[in-house]
Amino acid sequence: MSIDKLVIGPGRVETLTEDEEKKLKQVWAYLLNFFGYKVVQPGAYRSISRRPTVTSSIVSNDSKKKNKGLMGRFKMSSLKRSKSIEKLERVLSHHSANSMTEDGFVIHKCFKGLDNNDMYKAFWGFLRHDTPDNLILRFVRARKWDVDNAMVMLTNTMKWRCYEGKPDQIMINGELGCQKDGKEGFMYQMRVGKCLVHGHDRKGRPLANVRARLHHSSDQTTEEIEMYTMMVIETARLMLTEPVDTCDIVFNLSGMTMSNMDYGAVSYMVKCFEAHYPECLGILFVHKAPWIFSGIWKIIKNWLDPVVASKIVFTNTVEDLAKHIDRKHILKELDGDDDFEWNYLEPTESKNGLLSDNKEEKEAVEEERKQIIARFIQKTIEWIEAPDDITSKNLLKEKIQIGRELGDNYKTLDGYIRNRGVYDRLGDITFKVATD
Image 1 (spheres, rainbow, N blue to C red):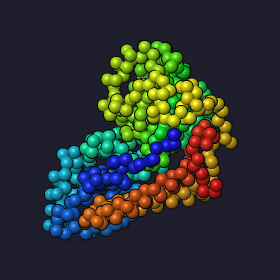
Image 2 (image 1 turned 45 degrees about the horizontal axis):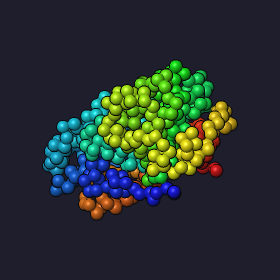
Image 3 (image 1 turned 90 degrees about the vertical axis):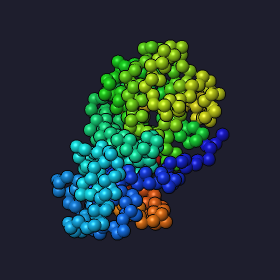
Image 4 (image 1 turned 135 degrees about the horizontal axis):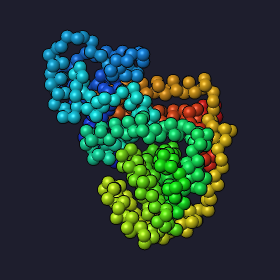
């Protein structure tokens, strides 16, 4: 069978309801105010007779004052408090128990103590070729459209990406960087093919085939297990093309024994998906679970968020898998028709370095990205502060298009900043540089 017709699901920027759109506006207002822009919470302007006059200006990156931002901000044109501003602030003061105001503009308390420049870089680095709105909406959907909870979740992920897990740096360095750094445990996992990102299900979602029998906790350090987990997840993200925005995992437990069980590794994987990669999992297949797994499952299921748990499907035969995956995309070791075999080649500078080291081209693409981001932010602010629903709808269409431009820009930038990996060599990731 061919891939089922791809449909943009609910809760994406292209399919928002009126209430969902308002909540996305709230999230963007929080983010942009923290990044250093002056944005009034959505709906506030409609609650006053006259909006306060604002002007746009660019702030130097050399400024170290709090919340100066990276691309610019809106400033009040006069320090004199008018009656309209006082009324506006009364509207804002009732917005949320989890927000605070600075000069009359709402900043969420989840940002307290954080550096806005670091968080700005973490957000746009997280993006890859996703569109900004749909990236944010993953977190909003995961928290059932509770804006405050979504803000906490998104902020924790930005902190994790910036200061703890650092998956962007792992991806940039790639397999070549891990080899140079002597991460032998990481390289071992690549060599044996512990997880193969290969094929897709009937909805076009990439498949991550985890071969549990190949895992022994003593073969690598905890850090190397975590690095490998992040590399697999981030690599799979590069294989996604909207409207497909989730991946499947096939846990092949055939041949598994207790020596293969590693609660720490499983716990870390669960944490990643639940806390830092929400709404990225399509189906998690647990295939051919041995009798010993029943005791293991009693422990693991208590760690799972109900949403993640609902995506788990237990399968025992190829026919079970074929309900969701065409047999031609099911590996032969799972009794499918795909005869793909893992043949890992050691990374080299020529095969696994950057696609291009042309600095002038890289700078040009990076400058283009900055300009697209600036346009996107400007359009987002106009959309948030739109005076009526018709204007808001038209501005949303424009910003969706700019978001897609940003995604296309990353596909070019990628070749100048990320060392190639095995999936580039296999042709599963096909990004090109400007001169290709």
